[in-house]
Length: 118
Image (cartoon, rainbow, N blue to C red):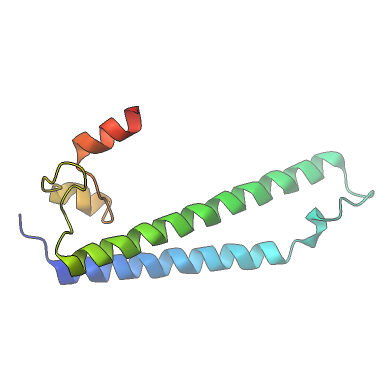
């Protein structure tokens, strides 16, 4: 397997930028909704509950974005270190198809399955 590391680095960098923009946009949208902190008496209880759920979903999405950005940064570091595409558990080569699907993957499919079952 021969991975074009320059192309992979560019892919990871672009993915990181897209996720960062989406996360920033989400955070900017949240700043405009100050009604959550003041559960006004004129707001219907159901509307307030919906607003709370929406805020929790947005927060979860932002946290996930931060996690993926960290994983992308680590993948770029692995490219620099010469360890990109190697499973961090067993040391085997991660198939290129897996890296195409999840370019910041650190585990081969077998070890990923074991991790998810644990």
